[in-house]
Length: 508
Image (cartoon, rainbow, N blue to C red; front, side, top):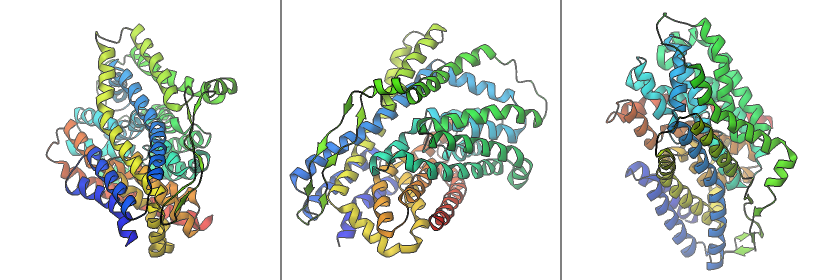
């Protein structure tokens, strides 16, 4: 009975979003309220416990939302300056081969965009570009969707990965290696699926060399950057590495000769300058001890006492999420956004009123996702502090047992599909996956890597993202066609992660 009650808030969110097509913000609020009521009436959550749970949730939410807001602000700074458009226009100059165009624009550049933007930006930007190059509308949506799925966890400047750290308390240094490994392998296979979506099995065979080289380079660079502690720029740097490798590869796969016009090299350099600033600032803050120490001197942190429910579940005393006021990743991104803005301003890239458009555009674009994250984080913390998450974990452990590692990625995928976000999935299911892994004796890092990898890959199928992508490619009203196409490709990649997880837990 308690297991069913503990499951109800999650089941309610799923029903409201998938069945009734509610947005994540409304569904998250309903899930939070149901969790609160169940915690009080059936799990014996006292007022003191709930008060501390809400403070914990607020700190966790701020930790994640700072990155989300700053990451999208940087994207808007560059986009308003025409930087994204300039980069996109430069890419077709590399090759006229349709398969290579799909790989370069729909896979490599989509990875780059996910690294710095996220929020459905890769598909929204790339789909109309592919249509303009002669791709069919369906393919134009499917290609970047498959292409950027592997980069979501470490994309948006690591916001989803930061959410997993915040929700579970497991250090990023522990989570990064298996997460980056699973996603890197999935990214390689994602490249082959992009080739397949363009030219079928023949395309996979013909483009096997560029797919292998690009996949190994991007996956390898992403892994090295992530395990070095710079997981917030892992997808971003992987995308840059892939773009660099594209130049020699494109010369071998030129396709039919055509006139792509003259490449604006000075304009391209200015467009890339904003992202160069980001790399320099993050490297300085992360690798120069004196700067790192200076920025992290002021810290926001709250100590919590031990609390318990009337049923006897105890939440030990401890400190909440530590937030560095001047050295937090989100604040560092804010520094980069400000500097990039002045560089583009000096270069004459902004029209009158640009700053107002940047700020208002950022506010309205991330407002809904911020509300959904706040409500779902609070729901997850209330469930954890009331003993509901442990109840679910015990139920799953007893019913799934040895097959749980195989199922773990699908739980993450379900969370991403129903909430529209890798971040939300990590928040809702991260604690559950952790406790289940501990109960069954499986390595927590492996199971949590499976959680975020499955969520990353399946997030591209979230109805909200499909609607956005379809609308930009002239596919409005045909979202079902996109979903049917994506479910095969995405399902294959999540299945791959399931197999990798099952193998990994046996080797550990």
